[in-house]
Amino acid sequence: MHNLTRLAAISLALLLTACTAHQQDTLYQKALDLGEWKAGFTEHQAQIADIDMNYLIREADGPILMLVHGFSANNSTWLQFADKLPDHYYLIAPDLAGHGKSSEADSYDLEKQAERLKALAEHLGIGPFHIVGNSMGGAISAIYAARYPSDIASLILIDSAGLDGENQSQFFAELEKGNNPLIATDEASFEYRMDLILEKQPPLPWPLRPALIRETVERAELNKVIFADMLATREKMDQEEMSRLISENVTMPALIMWGEKDRVLDVSAVKAFKDAIPQAEVKIYSDLGHVPMLEDPAASAETITQFVSSID
Image (cartoon, rainbow, N blue to C red; front, side, top):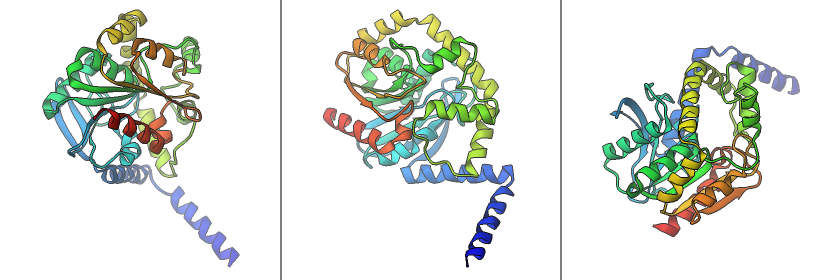
């Protein structure tokens, strides 16, 4: 019996190894489709401002949340997290220009990205909503809240870009040396990127991982363009200007969430955001990294649910 079990395991391993790239990609897409279905999302595509935007929606009669992903990610980042939120929450998860299934654009300036989200909100005809942004998506969300405060019920920042902390992160130290570990160009750099971003790796079984690696590596050149535009925004809107913009206009309720072990954006940035948004509540996860809603969807959803419930 032992030999038969071992033979079955070897046969299964050989079968999985024999999966073609096309089969891996198909399985990966089916896994995403299942995640969207489980979270109650439906997928939509529409001309929004200057791009063809892909976005996920879960319609409901409760608080409205717009979920804004980070650099080189897409709206699938939110699937497990969305599944943990209350069923009566109305959720919108767009793919930013140049990400996911949304089209490319002439500019990936963060202010321009915020303008596109404004156009999406107008397209959907939604009232005041809670905007939730991670990393680059946090900076875009903060700009949106500052530029269009009447649209925003609350600003929720998760390991947000935009304001720097006192301590330099591993990512910025590497960037100064001319290496951008957030842009994967091969399997090795992909694995390094995943380790840098995530303190707790979510399960990604084979053969889904090779499909994700291919998808990420194929985007390398576009990601370089997007990142350059992001840096250009950072230079145009320096720390002093960004802090002033936020502090003068973000007067709505706010929540700052951070993974203490974040090696991309150091946790010391919490103080910079708190100084700019003194009314903000703060939640720091001692065991998480740069993407808490992906590393611990349940804990992240609980934090946001409690915060939103205290407002609505």
